[in-house]
Image (cartoon, rainbow, N blue to C red):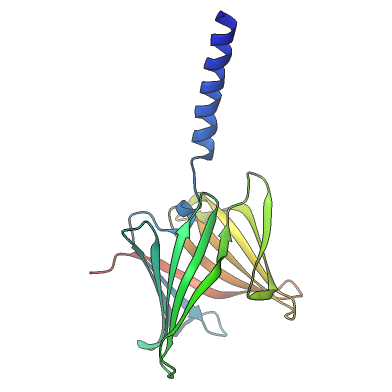
Length: 207
């Protein structure tokens, strides 16, 4: 009897340890901690800041989903705006709906995804995970673990590579714990790496 109680106790302890190790969710790498706004800019050919910028705002909805507002601007003027409704599982970011609007006309283009689209996955410890999006048959996504230096400190990050079959290059993005999306690079077939979009800090929207 005592042996059985000891076994049960050990299982409970192991369970709590497992929960503490697995308690981290992909949301920790997608939504900034204590901020709701991320700022980016595109570099020019020389690597300097260009007039193209992007702002992403994260809004928590009452039903637990998030609305992600992404605005591209050129010299302060709106170029396009995209709104995505996403939900989270422990290991996946899932897009259920989007609304796109371009300054060049065409009005709002609204799309509901059925099935919903997995746009980011969190790999198991020490592993990689590969997936594709149904309406992007030529794109293959691969996520793996890495560490990057942020303000002198090493932080865990999910590295996501997107390979499009007909292209000779790929994009590599980094989702950092407590920060969300950071830099995105363009990696050419010859191995040359060029910044595609550069992180410009977190802030909070006024409203």
